[in-house]
Image (cartoon, one colour):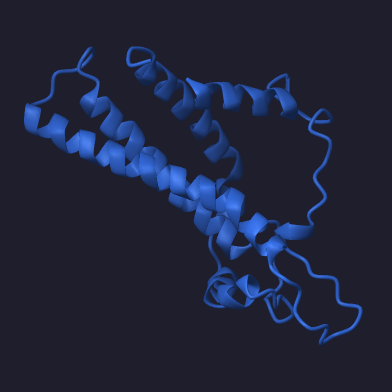
Length: 171
C-alpha cells in the first residue's frame, strides 16, 4: 500500500482537477450564499422557511467544495514533498510536508464525514411543531436521487464511478 499510495494520489488529484474544472463556476460564492451561511443554524434546527433562495448549490455546499479544493491542493503539494522515491527535498521540508499531508487528510476525511452525516443527522431530528401547515421541508434531506446508471461521464456510469471511488478508498 505504501508503494501504491503516491500513484493513487496522483490519479485522485488528476480526476479532482477534472471535477474542479467542471464545477468551479457553479460554486462561486455570492452575497446570497454568505447570507445562507449566516443562517445555517436555522437550517440545522429544521427551520428552512426563511432561508434565502439558492441556485444549483447552497452556501454550505459551495463552502464544502472550496474547502475540498484547499485540502486537495495541500494533499498534492505535501504529497510531492514527501514522495522521496521520486524527489529529494531537504529533510526539514519532508517533515513539514508529512505534517501538512496528515492534517489535510484528516480535514478531507472530516469534510466527507460531515457531508455524509449531516443529512442523516438532520433527518433523524424529530419534526418541529407544524407551525405552517402544508409546508414540505426542502434541502438535501428530501432530494430524490436519480438512477446512477442513467448518465455517464467519460464512458462510465455513475454507479461505476461510485464503485471505483470505493475501491480507491479500500486501497
